[in-house]
Length: 74
Image (cartoon, rainbow, N blue to C red; front, side, top):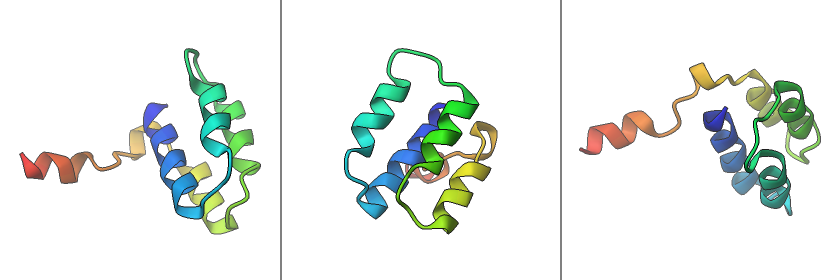
C-alpha cells in the first residue's frame, strides 16, 4: 500500500492539489488503509481523469516508484 501512497503524493505534487498532503496523511498515518477508502480518496482529487484512472489502476505489486533508477545509481 505504501507504494501506491507514494504515487498519490507524486500526482498531488504534479497537479498542485491544495491540502491533499494533509488529507492523505490523515487517511494513512499510523493505521492500515483499506482499498476502498484509498480509491474514494483518489476519486475525490481534483486532477485530470486520465491521472485519476492511472492511480486507480495501480497496485502495490505493480508500482515500483523510483526503485529501479535508484538501484542503478549504486
